[in-house]
Image (cartoon, rainbow, N blue to C red; front, side):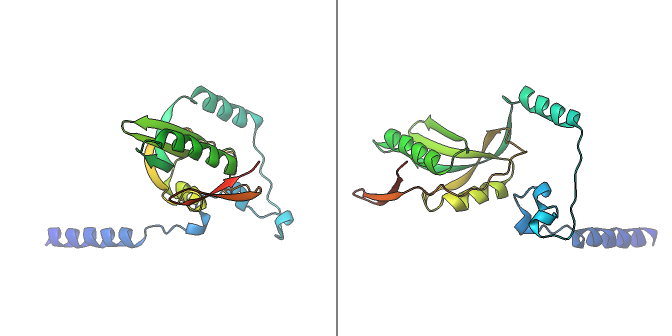
Amino acid sequence: MKRFIVSIIAVACALCSISAQEVVDSSLVGQSIINLLPSRSKGSAADINLYQSQQVKQNLDRFVEKNKDRVISGYRVRIFFDNKQNARSASEAAVETFKKHYRGVETYRSYQSPFFKVTVGDFRTKSDAMVLLRSVKNLFPSAFIVKEAINYPSTDREIIYEPDEPELTETTDSTRVETTVLL
């Protein structure tokens, strides 16, 4: 009888913990909590001021500098993946096109026989990588997310993945139309 009561209590506790799991608001993914704080300049009724010791920032900067060569598991967006005869030059063109449109995002070009690959960004979470993926789909329709060893991504800068919009011209290839940027 005691076993029966204990097992019923255990099942009830398990059901309560399952139903109490946290739901994440997807509109907050990839946003800095600091940028979400209310301020009068953003139209809020109050200001919130954060005060941080300079020593905290110095220690964080020192830690990042000391570990900059260390890699962690994360995500990148692969914008190019090909093994055709012109894959080398096409991968170089993909890197140049990406760098012209998205300044400040790291690009990585690699060759693993027989494929040339171009991946971009360093993201700790897949949802952060999805933000960039949605943005690059217009320029690189076959882009996708890959799990790789990444460099420590910057945590203190806010990046908005919107392509630069200089003057556009169109050039035709025998198989597709590419949009190139004139700078």
